[in-house]
Image (cartoon, rainbow, N blue to C red):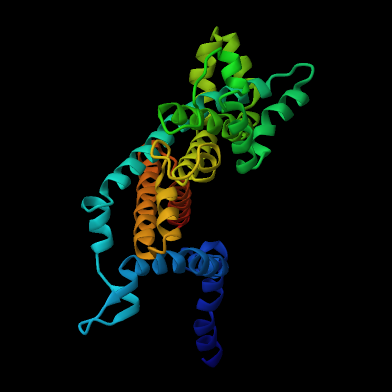
Length: 336
């Protein structure tokens, strides 16, 4: 009797171990959380804390004020949302909406042009021809140049007696405060960062089997049909990631227009530049408010891009994981 009772109580232990070996989603979740905890801790320190500190700073105002007795008091004062209301409807509203328009305009125009040119670069770099290595190196050189150096280079090209005016045969003040300066920034930005998209798209093209194109040729598909029906769908994940990175980068544009055109130029002033200007004038609360608004703007653009265009890499991985769990559960029920 004792032996029988002992075997009945010991039986669930191997069964539980077998279940863990087959894959327990809850146990896997704990292990994943444990493995990711150092990364999440670092992100909380280098991303979470600065964001919260910046938001807290945007609710205060620093400087010299007068107290009730008329004495000068220096320090910070809680002002609530006054910094935000001043940005949207106060004396700084005009500068904010101008910077917001410039930031959005540069983002849309440069990313669209970079995507088209980058895909073309990737298609060229993929082809097999003599001197391909030299062409690839030449295409990637602009991206390797530091942005500040690139801005100085294009400032020399766009100056009044520079190479660009000599090429077009006209005297245009590209680096002055006007619509021409917007075009100069777009040209310089597209020249520098199109190779980035081209490089990521080229990596996606290398993953497409050649047999797919050969089968399409046998079926009579032309070059345009192969590009639209084979290349674009298969390279879409890499292309969406590249475009997303460029969107997040251009929304924070500062150094290129600052070096190429200059600061405090209304035609190229961005949200990052106006936040930098406010902090240089010791208006830290206002600068933090600009930075918080820019952070929310970038987060909104990234969220909409991921949801609308299907670049939800994390969500796709989660769906794959759920399908695998369902398959395992269905297999267990079938064996039972």
